[in-house]
Amino acid sequence: MTPSATPYLPSLEMSTRILLDVAPNSYRAVLQKIGHQMAADLARPYAGIMDALATGSGMAATPLGSGVMVMDQTLMGLDRPYFLIARLSHLVDVQNGDHHPVDILAVLLSPDTSRVAHIRQVSRMMRMLHDADLCALIRGAGSEDAVRALFLSLQDVALVPVHQQAA
Figure 1 (tube, rainbow, N blue to C red):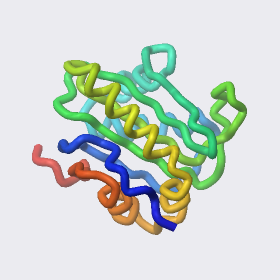
Figure 2 (figure 1 turned 30 degrees about the vertical axis):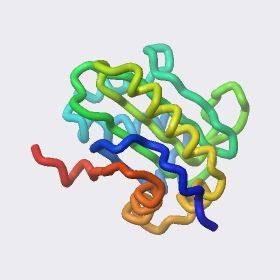
Figure 3 (figure 1 turned 90 degrees about the vertical axis):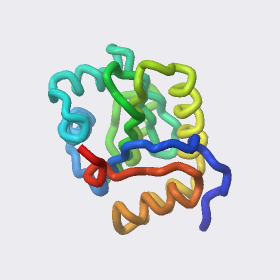
């Protein structure tokens, strides 16, 4: 099984975090887990990240079906896009209106300086995560590096692990 070879994201450096086998007991627990990780990665207060993750704050949450949901927002003060993908250990009801639980959650945060670039990145990310073969490979990947390799095989983008960035 191989995902399509269409490039999805533009060629740029993007901070990334890949979380595998997140074991939440609720959607709120998922948001708390990724919120803590994002706060640490972005050196921002946890409360501010949780406010950003609230869909009423401007965060768009789009269910793609087949167990996948994409969340996105622009944030002041970011110097580059930040992409987090979480593979959950089991399906979780996110009360998203389509009544389909998710096990892959992707979050894209972009600098608020270019909303057009953000919209393009979100669109490409959604096309990428509509690929059933890619999602199957993400679900079966054995490590963060394996997931990163899947994305790199699809696009001309430098996905820089957060821990490898210069301070």
